[in-house]
Each structure stands twice: as structure tokens, then as C-alpha cells.
Length: 76
Image (cartoon, rainbow, N blue to C red; front, side):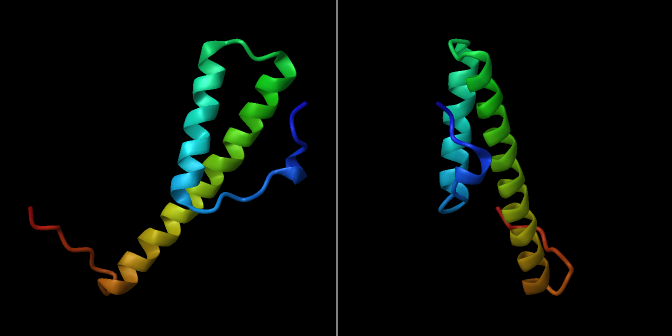
């Protein structure tokens, strides 16, 4: 049975969240999940998406601070 939302742990890091999200998407795309499992997977995916968006926003803010709020183009 799927875990309740309160039982889900926050991912260890961004990469772990992305790996879990990829695995969920693969399971859902196969189409073998029961309805309740699909709903639980969707809910977990939404939680992981919010976590990833928050981590990326924090990273962007840190870069802006490091660059003095004036992002510079990276040289190729």
C-alpha cells in the first residue's frame, strides 16, 4: 500500500529528488498502477516537484547574491 503523505521523507538532495521523480514518471507511464497507486504517485510527484522548485529558487538567489544581483553570462 502507498505511504501516507506525512510518511514521505524529504529527499536527501536535489539529485535524489529528481531520481525519485523520474522513477515515478516511468511507473506511471507504463500504466500498470492501480488507481490509488497512481494517485499516490501523482501526489508524491507534486511534492518532489515543489521541493525541486524550492531548491532551484534558492540556488538562483544564491547566485544572484554572489554576482551582486547582476547575473553575468558564462564564457563558453
